Length: 113
Image (spheres, rainbow, N blue to C red):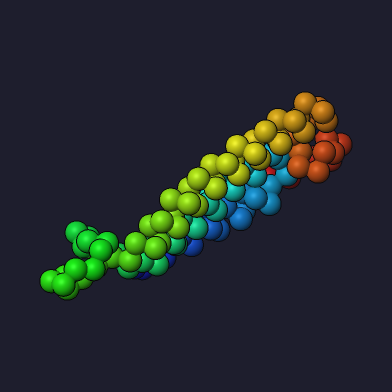
Protein backbone atom coordinates (compact mmCIF):
# COMPACT_ATOMS: atom_id res chain seq x y z
CA UNK A 1 0.00 0.00 0.00
CA UNK A 2 2.83 2.38 0.83
CA UNK A 3 4.55 1.67 -2.49
CA UNK A 4 1.34 2.41 -4.38
CA UNK A 5 0.83 5.70 -2.52
CA UNK A 6 4.42 6.77 -3.13
CA UNK A 7 4.09 5.88 -6.82
CA UNK A 8 0.89 7.90 -7.10
CA UNK A 9 2.45 10.89 -5.35
CA UNK A 10 5.51 10.66 -7.60
CA UNK A 11 3.46 10.45 -10.81
CA UNK A 12 1.22 13.34 -9.77
CA UNK A 13 4.26 15.44 -8.88
CA UNK A 14 6.03 14.65 -12.15
CA UNK A 15 2.95 15.42 -14.25
CA UNK A 16 2.34 18.59 -12.24
CA UNK A 17 5.89 19.86 -12.76
CA UNK A 18 5.71 19.04 -16.47
CA UNK A 19 2.46 20.98 -16.85
CA UNK A 20 3.75 23.88 -14.76
CA UNK A 21 6.60 24.32 -17.25
CA UNK A 22 4.30 24.64 -20.28
CA UNK A 23 3.95 27.94 -22.16
CA UNK A 24 0.16 28.25 -21.95
CA UNK A 25 -1.87 29.25 -18.91
CA UNK A 26 -4.39 26.38 -18.90
CA UNK A 27 -1.72 23.65 -18.51
CA UNK A 28 -0.13 25.75 -15.77
CA UNK A 29 -3.43 25.78 -13.87
CA UNK A 30 -3.77 22.01 -14.33
CA UNK A 31 -0.17 21.51 -13.18
CA UNK A 32 -0.81 23.56 -10.06
CA UNK A 33 -3.88 21.46 -9.34
CA UNK A 34 -1.98 18.20 -9.79
CA UNK A 35 0.78 19.45 -7.50
CA UNK A 36 -1.76 20.28 -4.78
CA UNK A 37 -3.28 16.79 -5.14
CA UNK A 38 0.20 15.28 -4.74
CA UNK A 39 0.90 17.35 -1.63
CA UNK A 40 -2.49 16.46 -0.14
CA UNK A 41 -1.89 12.73 -0.69
CA UNK A 42 1.61 13.05 0.77
CA UNK A 43 0.30 14.78 3.89
CA UNK A 44 -2.52 12.27 4.26
CA UNK A 45 -0.18 9.31 3.88
CA UNK A 46 2.24 10.73 6.44
CA UNK A 47 -0.32 10.02 9.17
CA UNK A 48 0.00 6.25 8.67
CA UNK A 49 -2.48 4.42 6.50
CA UNK A 50 -4.75 2.59 8.94
CA UNK A 51 -8.33 1.58 8.23
CA UNK A 52 -10.94 1.68 10.96
CA UNK A 53 -8.64 3.10 13.63
CA UNK A 54 -9.94 5.97 15.78
CA UNK A 55 -8.18 9.35 15.65
CA UNK A 56 -8.41 9.68 19.44
CA UNK A 57 -6.22 7.65 21.79
CA UNK A 58 -8.27 5.79 24.38
CA UNK A 59 -7.21 3.47 27.16
CA UNK A 60 -8.18 0.31 25.27
CA UNK A 61 -7.00 1.41 21.82
CA UNK A 62 -4.15 -0.58 20.35
CA UNK A 63 -4.06 1.35 17.07
CA UNK A 64 -4.84 4.97 16.41
CA UNK A 65 -4.61 7.40 13.53
CA UNK A 66 -2.74 10.66 13.83
CA UNK A 67 -5.34 13.46 13.39
CA UNK A 68 -2.78 16.17 12.57
CA UNK A 69 -2.24 15.16 8.89
CA UNK A 70 -6.00 15.06 8.41
CA UNK A 71 -6.29 18.62 9.69
CA UNK A 72 -3.36 19.68 7.50
CA UNK A 73 -5.04 18.15 4.43
CA UNK A 74 -8.27 20.02 5.15
CA UNK A 75 -6.32 23.26 5.42
CA UNK A 76 -4.38 22.47 2.25
CA UNK A 77 -7.61 21.82 0.34
CA UNK A 78 -8.91 25.27 1.25
CA UNK A 79 -5.61 26.93 0.36
CA UNK A 80 -5.37 25.06 -2.96
CA UNK A 81 -8.93 26.06 -3.89
CA UNK A 82 -8.15 29.72 -3.19
CA UNK A 83 -4.85 29.51 -5.07
CA UNK A 84 -6.49 27.86 -8.08
CA UNK A 85 -9.20 30.52 -8.17
CA UNK A 86 -6.55 33.24 -7.96
CA UNK A 87 -4.46 31.74 -10.78
CA UNK A 88 -7.52 31.33 -13.00
CA UNK A 89 -8.52 34.95 -12.46
CA UNK A 90 -4.93 36.04 -13.11
CA UNK A 91 -4.88 34.03 -16.36
CA UNK A 92 -8.20 35.51 -17.47
CA UNK A 93 -6.96 39.03 -16.75
CA UNK A 94 -3.73 38.41 -18.67
CA UNK A 95 -5.72 36.96 -21.58
CA UNK A 96 -7.97 40.02 -21.65
CA UNK A 97 -5.08 42.50 -21.54
CA UNK A 98 -2.55 40.74 -23.76
CA UNK A 99 -4.86 38.99 -26.19
CA UNK A 100 -3.16 35.59 -25.85
CA UNK A 101 -2.73 32.91 -23.24
CA UNK A 102 1.04 32.51 -23.24
CA UNK A 103 2.66 32.61 -19.82
CA UNK A 104 5.31 35.10 -20.90
CA UNK A 105 2.81 37.23 -22.87
CA UNK A 106 4.57 36.79 -26.21
CA UNK A 107 2.56 35.27 -29.03
CA UNK A 108 5.27 35.70 -31.67
CA UNK A 109 7.09 32.45 -30.94
CA UNK A 110 5.80 29.06 -32.02
CA UNK A 111 5.26 26.42 -29.39
CA UNK A 112 6.98 23.11 -29.97
CA UNK A 113 4.95 20.19 -28.71
